[in-house]
Image 1: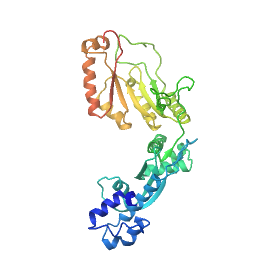
Image 2: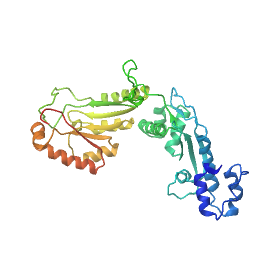
Image 3: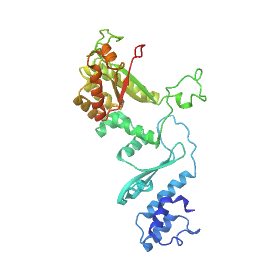
Image 4: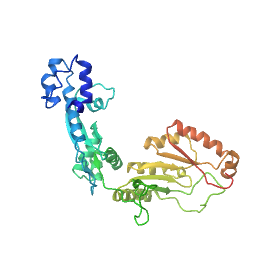
Length: 345
């Protein structure tokens, strides 16, 4: 009967010389017993609340929910929001080394799609996400009211989706079932995409003159105001297709775009994941970019070993790339190196 109380039982066993007077068949709920008798045994005051939390978890574990795909973002129907008189109780339940102290907080408990049960302290961001979804609030309006960007609200909702206390419709970015079907080599997860990437060529300006460059046209750079409109359109597209959006800036060298930091900020404000395909730059530029929103990755190109690479991309390029990769590592930016495959490399 008391197998549903692993953390509570472990705590009681460590504190009491004998637990025979507690584990009895006529004890309906351990939390009730602890509320009545905890002070008799000089037990920590939070132990009844811990047992109560484990009872909620056990109840959800015992009743797997039959989830269906919603038509719009909704609260997980198994979600419980509990008022707690103790701080850090979910972390203690999870076995973390924390101190449980008196204080009010809200605890979220829900069943995930795989049947597992999660309990966590509700952060202000979690609670705002729940409020936005429950009230079906327009995000642009909410962003103005709370003095934040719409991207910040998107990130809160995306976190709730990741944790699965919010449920969302399936992605509409999918392969045609008339052409692609799941099989032993291609699972279902390869047939739809949770994300969509805009690889955005914002400028032709470049500080290299690579021999194999395929685009030496003189197209004008993206107008900044038009660029902001493109970002708004892309956000609308991602929302209607039920996907996360990523903007990967490229060129030319995107860092030579006159208003790059401003355009990067506009993309960050709309909640997109961000990346750069570009050339080496200085540490201070990377720090300015990271201060706006950390990059998902920064991709550079090498065409092989030093002599072959520099023949194509210019003398000294190989060493500049190695130095720049060190800067990216030191600034905690994930780096990628790509090449154009030829018979010579």
